[in-house]
Length: 107
Image 1: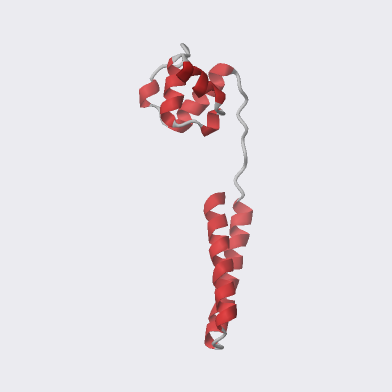
Image 2 (image 1 turned 135 degrees about the horizontal axis):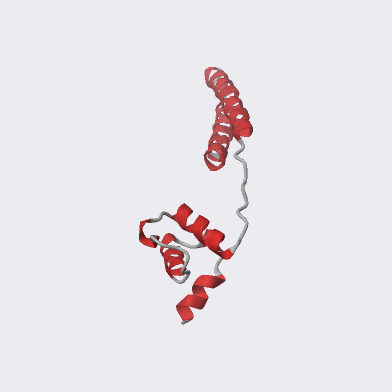
């Protein structure tokens, strides 16, 4: 009984697939729980409980802009390398790295 309370305290999006399966087993409207993936389980549980799904559009435009910025930073880094400016090279590399991480998160 304590496990059941523990599972329902967490938000659905933060639950693991196994926790979602256990929760879905208790809902009679949902069948085929073992064959479902996490996204399918989330959708089925939200539909059964009447929770509206929040659709967040992907930021394709911003990803494109970030990639353009990465290209320009790479060009600046190359110029700094040719000028043997180690400090600016390091700065450009950090900026490129941060932007790459942001594009991975946005994708």
